Length: 245
Image (cartoon, rainbow, N blue to C red; front, side, top):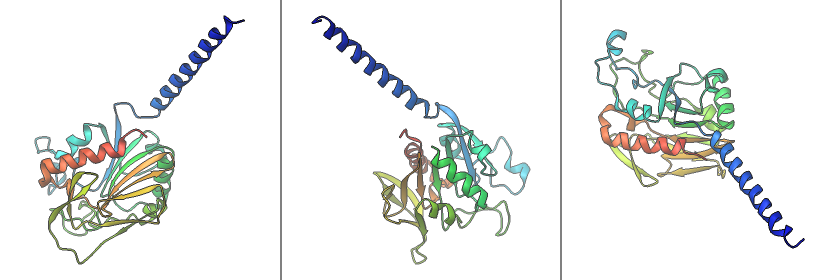
């Protein structure tokens, strides 16, 4: 009997180790594999040139946007024209860069997907400052004012804008990283514990159900002229949005 106790203790310890290892494997399985596709939903000319016609926009010899390389370094980019359950269910990560206004069914699909474990980096600019060759009203022109109140409200956020602020480039620190800005917006919460504001409201990190959303109230960091400063900021924001929970 005295010899049985050490044996039982050893077996119990082994079972605990096996259970912990299994739990770790299951948790790892919930994270996207390295190189897994990343959805990109945007009106900005990141995957194409801001050219006068379609042929010029798609020329392979044109200089690619630096942000494309930064984004593709995290996984193959999957351009999205619409947000639907069928399309989103194939993804775990999504970049919304100055997107167009969402239809009601797109808001529902996006919210359900995030709550089920989706990870989002959202750049929502209330006053886009990047110039475009396309005139106002042209559907090819990037969204000048982001219109995402329904989904932001659903997540407990509000996007505000100070019309009296001066025009011009600057930067705002978010968790120790300089984010380029120009006429940025301001995020506010309802005081809920699942969201935290950074950089005087420039950014917010929110746990939404099983998913995560990182929101930046400006898109100036994606301007072509930003170069290394924009690349550094974007790289850090992607890490923040797509890190394991």
